[in-house]
Length: 105
Image (cartoon, rainbow, N blue to C red; front, side):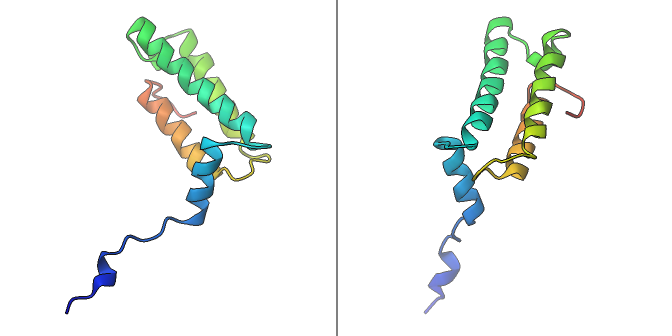
């Protein structure tokens, strides 16, 4: 007989479950952070569709957009409810790089 427990998936850590729930259905202090993050991402996506170029490559809009991303990261030092700030910080920095912003936020 084989050990069946080795094939069972590990439960997701509670902090990630809370983070995912906060990002999907924000409440209280989570809502402005999630809305700003969503708008920041949407702005980059719309720029990509309109100009067929990543926003990070735009010499005027790119720095302004990166500045907003950096400001959202700074706001993670305040009240954020169930949001895991380390996770969102990493996601924002990664999204900036993927969107053509080569330097550190």
